[in-house]
Length: 422
Ligand code: TRP
Image 1 (cartoon, rainbow, N blue to C red):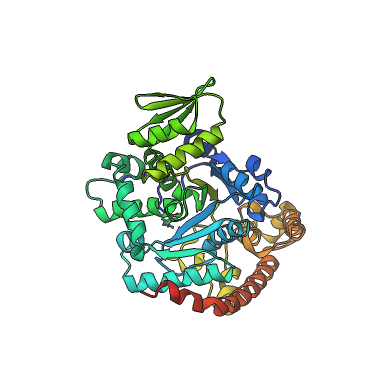
Image 2: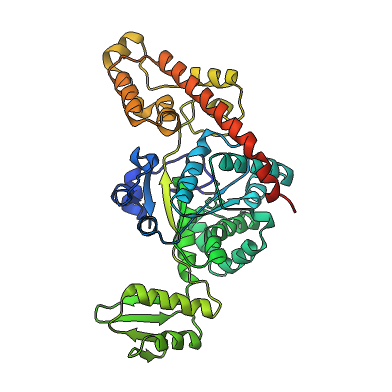
């Protein structure tokens, strides 16, 4: 497979943030975050740093309109601290009124990573327990058992061809069809909430590596619409792409005084919002889906303790949720830091918290209080807090977090059995 700019299956993150904004059309989160009355810590701390189409979600939260939050987890290994951010984002959006949807991407794990179904089930349950322990409420399914999802994946596949897949993912003639099919399952995951509950804005919290899937899905959602709506200033033009005649007449009748032509209806004196609503109703009435283009948020990755990516295939890089205090202590104490070569140098120059996996672990998950986090940062920068001390403090925080989290996991673990009841 050729190496693309952003590739969800490569472990390297090669794209600089600036290029995301200028070339890929992703936008910084700051403007839209300030529309929220309760800005979550992950936006305040710039962990979630950019988005596509989040305005719709901020609007839905603010005005208490229906919206969905959906994401998927590939059960290809045990969940670890690197997965916690997405989970917290999902739970936060559910608490803001979003309808939750979690897809366990077992077909993807089976097709792309070669895991057995039994392994997929074992790891899938671990992810779900973590989500429930964090307070998740909502729909949960596995790709392999969700037949509506599979039907949707099939319909979505009618809108994609091989050259598109190779342009986006670098697929070549050797790529298995199962790999391509698993991509379409992810597209279906993202659109599924709107099939289950009707058209509504949907936010998909993901790492930036998943953006190709988001772009593909947004394109497909648009292609599956039966109409396009164009604001022409003087009037709004509702133009059929592949809508049946009755759907066009439906729109025409709803707007007295509108003009109907072959393939389009022109409407004067109505708001865009109303036209959009009527067009959606007309699409639904003839069996269309009327998808709202899905939105996404993108977060930075929590770096691995060894300085690279936090990855379940590199034990010293991650902290698992069920690891013993002894192992946690050893891993944190052995972590790479933003410290200097010598103690003298560190006292003189101070540490570099912004590139330090240990500081970032605190920033992501271990210190909730902004003032306390700021103090740790200051002491580090001033050369007052040495790495040994800081790592010891952090290990203690991680241990306390895990003890609490595991007791919560125990309380909710019975909830996953229903999901896997066949
Ligand atoms: N491909 C994602 C991963 O590798 C998992 C995933 C499957 C997903 N379906 C999804 C993510 C839908 C977001 C939305 O982790």
